[in-house]
Image (cartoon, rainbow over all chains, first blue to last red; front, side, top):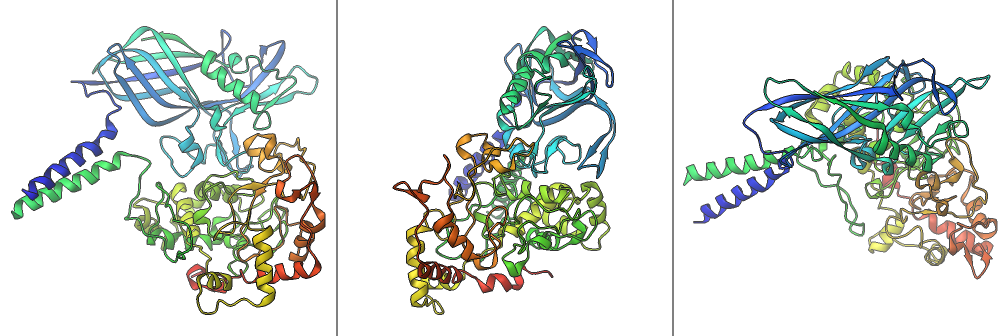
Length: 261
Length: 353
């Protein structure tokens, strides 16, 4: 009898402890893979590094565009959620970056796709993801999930504001003045963490053996919407109100759906 | 009967195993209780993501004293955190980093950090010892280590790969380097000064008349911020050493705590350092501006500068500072010297192996 009690206790514990995987949709008969593409634009033009783009009457040339995409979720027409918790993907288009004042060089890179594996078969109508790094990971850089690392120049480990991650970074030059002015638009405070919710115009159908895709437009012009880069060429911890505005831009206007395949 | 016991055992094991799906609890070993905590200290709450283990602490200790952690292999954590000085360095703003440039802040003493739960650095720019350790490792004026190169250097060592495997069950990686260092730092407990023995009524705990007078003065004027057995409230105060915190440089260092919180109410505030071992941790203040305890006493007596964020305890009834006679200053300093924990300064548990 006593043993039976223990058995029940252990079983209850087992069920209870296993509950941490419950945020994933119930496993479907089959699973498929899908892809999210982040296609950078400036307005309607394709984004490219070291190429002049007119924004608000000035001509800007960029040398990097980088941001963390995290906690990607898909919501199905049955309101079931596929959640990739603790997922961190560095989306970027960058020239070579000197990390730690040149101690280490991060190579030029272009990365615009995120692969989602083992997605339960279904019809998904909503895409949710966050831009930035959640407070738990941002406040403790030794909890390294996904692609989080100290080696990619997306950290502020040298006293900039906190020992923490840079959530998003757009840097380059304003070429209009006689002497070009460096610009840097960055976010990274815990309060800059934003979750983007996008309703898909047509459902994303995932099933085994079928390749599916969500293509997003990422409008770089919208990142700096309502930011006067002539007056404030540097958006950083020194200008928290501008950082909040940039974070809101990422949430509200930067990402739109180009197509669902 | 026996069969059933085995079955239950395996279910319990399975249940424990199932717990590992929580990524924030990636403990590899059975947590070790923090050793040597004095009875009168607050309860220690271990890190959920980096619980103490004997192997983790031993590894952290080796790393703490290892100069290979710096870019030129000449600077260790211990270079600016020397045990004989309660893990401070005796400089106002040290130039011992690999660039030779003076740092922006005074190297803080490392004392009872297991309870430092409200931010590290003088302005609280880091939330935990793990994140904090990345800053000196990477900063160009401190250890300026290429973190990828560091992994190669540690992998080439005869003992590190095994020690990391034992402590964390993994190959050497950046996160476990700072975790191990943080574990060692949490063991740096100081609670055996003559004053502690006096408080606990132990032998060797007698204070003379001057020291007792000094204790009374400290209770009256110092313990509100340098509070409790830790002798710090772990909070941020403006203690009147400056009255101008305008700083439009990118680092905004003069703003103090406000550079982190963005709140004007935090301008000029800095973290309360513990009074423990204060005899050994000079020069004093976040920039090491005071060389001696006499100068610190004189500051509180006659040097307080007024500003909107000045701590109200330093401006009572519209009067700035704490009026102290020469005799009282001497008595206070006598008391402060009873806070020196000679066991802490020399214990082989904290020294280089």
